[in-house]
Image (cartoon, rainbow, N blue to C red; front, top):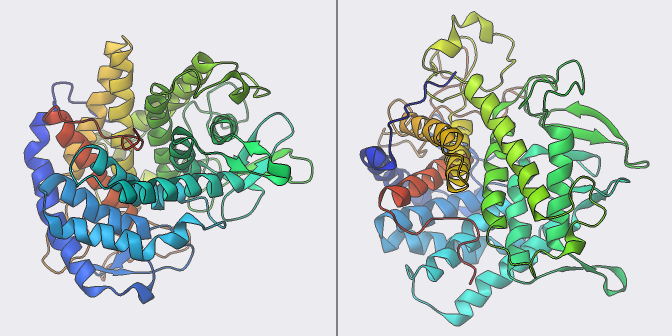
Length: 469
């Protein structure tokens, strides 16, 4: 389990954050100078060079989001130009994309970050530019909410790119697009001009994910371990009945793919932060009407907190001491790594790969969860989560996880995309993937670095909704 350094403070990580962003500037310049848009969205590296994988174009926003994050930390206007120009030139189709569950990834990482920087005074206030960002975020939230499967018990979900039967854990992080759209006063317009609340769909989807994709140790099935997360739940779309757990990228429906867990662990704490900002008018009673078990704001907060804490406790208990997990807690050869939970993760082992991208995402979730609980008087438990997040951040912001080779286009090393499909590069002479980067790992490492830097300097607290005023 993670060996939490409870004395670690955000300011202690200042040199680590600087180290990451120094190398991120080199890598981002290298990639933006070489890669052409017609090559497709960069997904992961092979021998240090970004390549595409035509599943969905869910990573293009991270490419420009990286540049925006670097500008945020360094003030280098060249990176602002790369991020802003890329957003204008490339992201419109992502705003209107009806075929994916990825709007919170692509569009909040670009339009949302730019709107936040304008609200913080980091870029010049321009009313028309602000409205451009706001319009993109409104439309993105509505388009995402329209990708909807209705369940018979007052719930429903944004279905994955697999189709209307498929509920992914990943999509909890895309709820940020619905949240931003709602905060901006937007709704989804349906047949006969029906006004469909983005916030209600957020609540319904979040409860469906907690109910079906997260386990709470209450005997749901033979493998019900509290905090275990399943990547995907399958439904009968004719009756709406739940059928079974599944996975696309994990080893088994009855083990935990750690990046699937990471979306839950990051998604629920940031929604808890969002709920704090809503007035009673922005959270009217009809948002909760018909949603089982959720009658008011407090019920929703307690459900989000219960879900986040379960995932956080499972992650801490099932991750090596330094905070970097192996790609799946039930990976078939993981037991061949002697006492793997009692020592730092080994990205160069011969049995199973680690996933640093899951670590970077989980670290942010742990930090946000810890701060939320401390602010609500639960200092001991909150301090534990905050310490676990900072401990994990210290690891991924250090060697061997930071890409330093001059010709490597990645930022965060030792990530995994799709182990079952064998898409990840296995270097010559090795038996498992290592030494490569992925676009979501790079972006979330920088987003984590920005968060830690702001905390260390007592700067404006960065959230996905901070640009709205």
